[in-house]
Image (tube, rainbow, N blue to C red; front, side, top):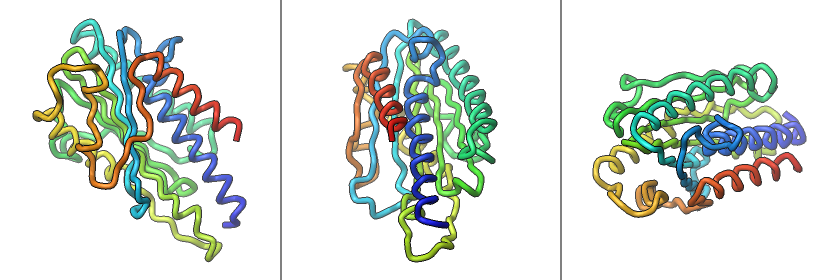
Length: 241
């Protein structure tokens, strides 16, 4: 593969990743205000590996939204997942980068401990075709009382795009379950007692102390307005590339 083609693919995939991060944090644009319908407040934080030694180290994004009551949070979880399925299906039809993509629901048989997270939890992984084989995305939705957590893990093997030694590089597909297993392991400790009972909404999300060694914080949003602004800025910036 020529370097120019590889770079274009990288930019397209990076735009896809950031676009999905924005839509996931903003609950897939469920309503016109780009926040989950009925959400009273929200917060989000993302982390990535500082060293870059492991090309398959997941990029983690955590968000949480507060609702009036448990029922409203549960309804929003169902709506979010439904919207996500529709969004991925639409993207597969219109975006060449998403050709061959598939959204797969994951259950307790695939990932131990999934059913023990919060009051209810659902998980998906997105697999891609050969043209985007080094990208993996995992999604974990957790309802904890009247709060809805949306956690994502992105596995993006940048090394596959930077290899200029040969035009024929075999890219092993990134396994979205890598990120999902990490998410459930973090969640097991977090919901098992590490999560504080009080504090601000941002305090309900895992800190760098809960992540593997070598991670640092990239961005944080401590309100719904900040989530909207940060998501819009990220997508706008990539569209100008």
